[in-house]
Image 1: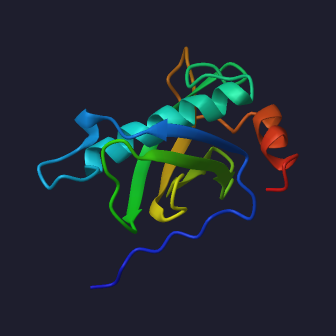
Image 2 (image 1 turned 90 degrees about the horizontal axis):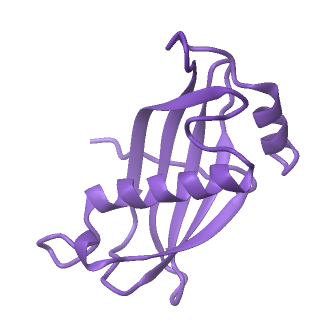
Length: 144
């Protein structure tokens, strides 16, 4: 079976640190796959906030996640601090991808790579719209 590969963008726009909590640990004793989605959701909120946005208001638009891909590289354990780097990439007319690189802060070991596809929606009509130019420009200012 072919393995999924995720290539990071040339530059990440944002970085944050997120600790692995006890409820992030699965029955195997390591970071659970469901917890990774929760962690990258938190990182996405922080990333958008750093640009002056929220998921419900990006220049008047809201976003909706259309897909998620996670590639696991190594285990994470309770008490580890994750450095999560975030970048935007693959801009289309109505959607783009948000990329996440999770590494163990102490060891530098890569834990996972992930991406979520997002689409932009008019809050009132609930219809898909073009990516707001200001959002695209903020992402392009950093080299993407």
